[in-house]
Image (cartoon, rainbow, N blue to C red; front, top):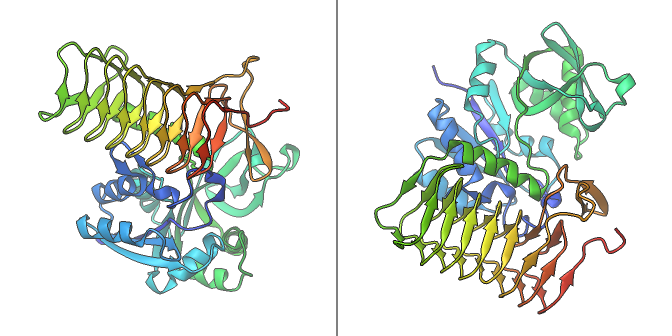
Length: 404
């Protein structure tokens, strides 16, 4: 029996992902040797989903998706959302491809296959997912009765929350939902309004999850995905990798994966869990621990990289990089030092769209957008975001919140 089409919404303005939102949608961020949407499509294929529709923002990333489609075992169609008008508009952009039933997910749902199969097992025409929360004021909360959802309230106060179940971003819908969506004024929240209206008139089957689905609203949440991939990593050294005899591959705390044509130079140390991508070069006397170095990354001599993600073609040398992300083709001059903790050890807050956001962690270094360049001797305070293609002059100290 053919499974319903899966709609992957790789559209939208993506603004809260600054500074990792410059060239591409977050679906195309690279981790563990593949873009996130590639991981998602591969997982769907492994669980028997053969028809996929990817909605992109106004043909952005079309070339990359066409490459995915050409190399994939599944049937992938591409639809462009003309304007970033939210989930509802994204679905309506592809409504001609909606069958009697269809799934809606996000491109960073890299392990979603089993959940979609659980939804199908309920043998209902429409299904929503939910998971328990202690902070309903931050989420969309479902009105429930038995195993049915009959309403959705956005961010209610705790005393007014109708349940402790927050809705999750995986949906099994049908053509009836399309009609509700077409009759809803199109704006950023038209999807939620249409869903609420539909549930109030025709309650929807509810799947309660033990674990919440991953979220990728902010750039630093990419570290959560890093941990997921670390948990699945196995130790491996490709036959074409060149690992110096006196380099140390330390697997006591986790596996180390070294890809084809990588070079691990004299007296360097790789401490697991760690992923070393194709054609990565780690220079003499460098220490890499609990980090991802994606394809073509260069880490020069005398550098420490810890709990960080370096995306394709980024380069750094003679520096200390901790709890940080360097996007594609970032160039770091010698002598970078990242501060990754506040002196008072409180959670780090980051300025996003004129609002301070609690990162829910007390260790966060710098996040640098694509093709930015930092001169020699730069220092960064915790939680600094550097825009794509920025140029930071030598010896600068970057304070994100000077008043803190």
